[in-house]
Image (cartoon, rainbow, N blue to C red; front, top):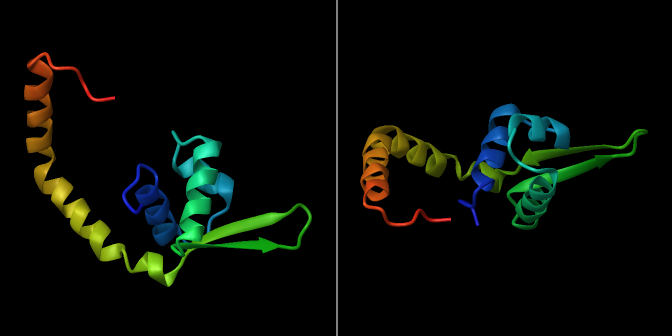
Length: 107
């Protein structure tokens, strides 16, 4: 759930930038489709990691924010970021060896 493809970037954006509207998030996550962003936001809200606030304005305004439960994942994300910084060269080398072996790339 937490480490699906778009969950981590969404939570990091909300943690870093505070409440965001849908289009602000989409612009910050340039390669995500609106459909996938909508699906992930709904799932994260269902899981209690983000909140959705709809304002009674014209035009309608909706903002998403990270909850305390979502914030509590910060140390896990920090650890994974540090791990990636220390190990991405080894991961790149392993990928190169795999690709050179002629085996098919994973989808």
